[in-house]
Amino acid sequence: MSNRLQKILESKRAMRKQLAALTFSQKVALLEKLRDRSLLIASSPLRRRHSPAG
Amino acid sequence: MKATLKVINQMQADGVLADYAIGGAVGATFYLEPVATLDIDIFVSFHKKPGSPLLTVSPIYDYLTARGYKTRKEYIIIEGWPVQFLPPSDALGEEALTQAVETKLDGIRTWVMTAEHLVAIALKTGRAKDFSRILQFIETGVLNTNKLDQILKRHSLLAKWEDFGHKFLEDSP
Image (cartoon, rainbow over all chains, first blue to last red; front, side, top):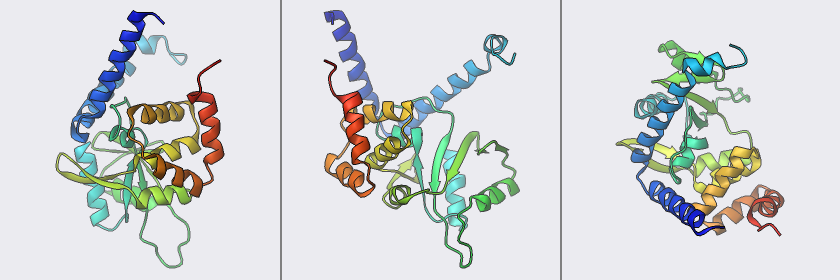
């Protein structure tokens, strides 16, 4: 594994630990933002045009 | 989600359900980094009524639909969140419910399954996303290994745990 990739993985691990250490309320606020974004993507006309049903 | 939990707490206060605990991805978020999810899994127990041996979630649906909440497939939409109410299907689920951890979400009292029970249930369920979540629990270092061992032993999951270890925790040759 290259040094660069190693650094990226370490940085991702550190970020995940930092996020895991937030309070439940802070994490739920992030979770709600993630959910809103997922719903927005799911409702995109582009996504519907390419869906098997559409 | 705060408004959703307020409604569920009110149901509890009104005696529609006895105990509840958040499981699934939202439960895991209590211990791990937040992961995108579209629904909330709520494990519930009921006050036992004599002569009614079947556990059914219909009192919950009756209560909520009478208050204007709509159903969608197996979910009921409470204050914008699809919620699935799940009575425990086995001893592991019952134990997870009774040992749930009390916490607060912006001042609202609620209960979340322990990390070890979430891992044991994920192991038993055994989908790819469950295995991925178990790995996250291990990597985050939040598990009490003695407690997890006891749960796995009590619910005959040690063989599954060993399989999981061989597949995902051992370095490839």
